Image 1 (cartoon, rainbow, N blue to C red):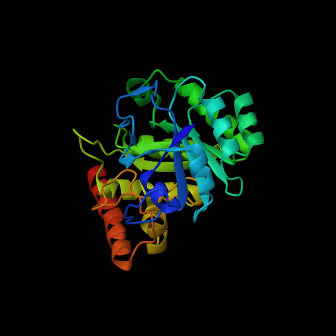
Image 2: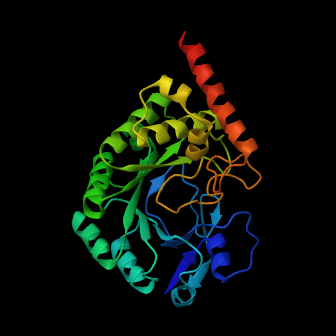
Image 3: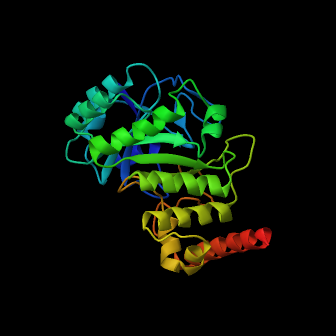
Length: 295
């Protein structure tokens, strides 16, 4: 049995020899050759997902190189029949000393129970869209919006924690994004933010807007968000922490969305002092634009 391995993970494990601008802190693997979902914004191809290349290696060879220097394993899955069974087979072959996350579409609660019994630590589900209207227009041949939300609640109940992936730049406004992040957090579900970076036509969200929403996600998670005053009161340390990759513990997803040359949307490492200053200015610049527009 073969498994796809992110290029950075393959290099970190010694399966390949590529230069790494930033080392991944999680080992990323992917199951499935063809996704049955039809999401209009997705950049998924046979050997690629987002901006990441996923070469194929024999699973036994991969398992022999584990655990490597990492904090977590992340098993990403495409949407196809039989994926829960493939996850179970793969988990049994992977190293059991590292926490293991699975990124997947919603499945029956009984399947989640099986994954937990097999050693899966937590589940992330790609809700992606911030509103049911965007979901219905952009995600096709997948479970319904209600099933995604129920799947997240089930994952939370089964694993004690769950992560929802949200993509900024699919057509939502700021209020849509904030409301969705608040709803998820209120229901005990962590939020992992992504920026939509089309590989061909289209433009990504403004960095200033993304940085502003990153900060609000951070403040919501910290139970400190009550409106624009909380944004204005945020410290540089808050902004720097918010600009880091969000998601499962130990996940930094280097250059998953953006080009290596930047600009960086999710920092896969601590920010330099200059980057902290820039991020702070980006947040304040966008917040000021909002205040002016609302007058």
